[in-house]
Image (cartoon, rainbow, N blue to C red; front, side):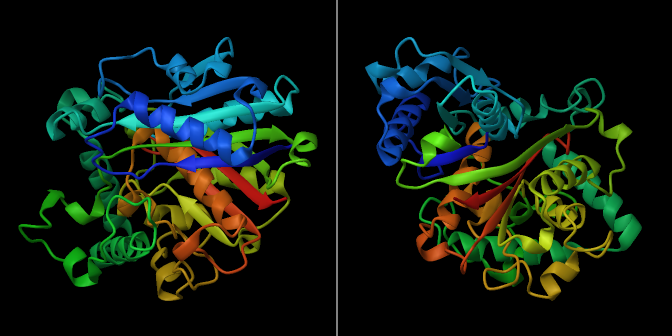
Length: 387
């Protein structure tokens, strides 16, 4: 039995100084229950996606969801964590419970409060999601790790710095239309393609505009089994979902390719009995612009080394054949770690129901999602359709 998204909520992403982790969780939980028009007492189980790692003092957070409504008391609640794919991991746990028949209605919340830590502290917290023995302990950070990926790609296929700037410019332009986005400013190609005091080199060849943002934010979903969804106001069917994990050390990867995402994506397409050409949009994990470029290739939008073709053809732009990150992606929307994968599913569901407002794509039928944890280590792909 398929799981269906029947309600959702999404907070603004950004530096939310008047919000705490708890207030973000409570806000989106209440809004998602209201949007789905379900009573809290009808929820069978709860999953919270929350990475933390030291962003906030509280490490035992699963029952914070119960603060939203007394009707959630006594419901089983579980915190899920899988680096930057934490949100998708929580969604997939709820899907599995529904498909197994253990739950009829499930609540998924993804949340992170990152901006209470300094930039240096945040960088160190995230670096601990690498293979610490070889990477973080040597001072490697995620900008540094993805800079290594960019250098490996450039060594094999030539300098693509301008292509990365085109991706950044595309996603920032898309973010202008997304009311939830942290950065709603069209920076333009020239700014993104230049090194300047406002756009410094972070880890060569990655500039500031090649890196995603430090963000606070939350998103939530109510999932139902297919039979229950028939009585709901809306339903978005999760046609397929696939998780693939790769080795943690980057030394065991081909740094110029993202093999884990490619395998997860192929499995998701196969299980949905569709091809990439059948999709209407994709929300993918552009934690760095080099990740989006390599994902064009891993997801079959272009051959290896030729990801720029997806931009040249206009395919991935909002009015193209397959818009990629019409929300602005992590680059402009923001990247509160635990919320990201949930956010991707919310935004794809909004598109399929025609509820995406100014960033709505034309007549969407199928949406693809790719959420990635670490350096293509934990990879989650799903295919959604309006039901």
